[in-house]
Amino acid sequence: MTTLTNTPLAPLLDRLFTEADASMAALRARAAQMPADERIAMMSTKTGYRALYTAMKDMPLAVSRETGALLYMLARTMDARSIVEFGTSFGISTLHLAAALRDNGGGRVITSEFEASKVKRAHANIAAGGLSDLIEIREGDALETLARDLPEQIDLVLLDGAKGLYPEILALLEPKLRPGALVLADNADWSQEYLARVRSPAEGYLSVPFADDVELSMRIG
Image 1 (cartoon, rainbow, N blue to C red):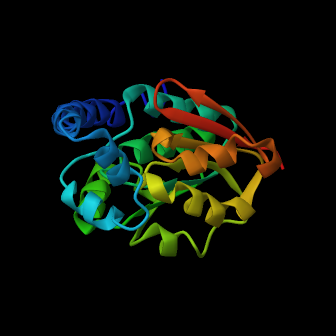
Image 2 (cartoon, one colour):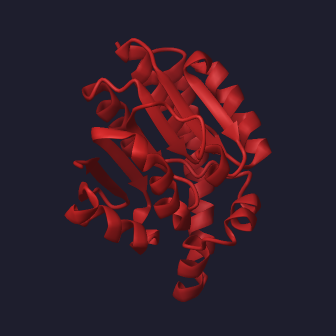
């Protein structure tokens, strides 16, 4: 048994995913009614992300179950000890990452979330999962909170906040990425600028799309 598949985390995640699925179904139905160009502009914005995500403060906006499992497996396989996450939300992905650290023997997840109500809910979920000692939530805009006090070496990054900011967040973390570090970007197709960067070997990455909504990149230089 692993931390991920054992009590208290497994039943907690099952409940959180069930709640997230219901929320996402309603969100997708609403988004489908918007004109395509308006939807793209909204999701890829670099300036209006605060208003957008404040409007969705009661929605988990979680990774899929499959992506959560992938995060755990990647972190275990590479024996990750230092992980940075952009976009805590309710802490579902954070719990997967911290579970891997627990089973790896320790480490720290630094995660950033600007919506105060989500920080509160994430703390509660993380405590319920018994993983508080492995997680540091930085409240505020990630362009500020992830611009300082980073570990000397980062093994794994999850990008799952405002899609338009993916290039800027990567730039903040890049100097600390060790060779072979992995960057997983959820819904990366909303940031073509980000995809162009990580898919260019000249930028120091090897990158492939994974499943329908994930881009997995490895730092090679």
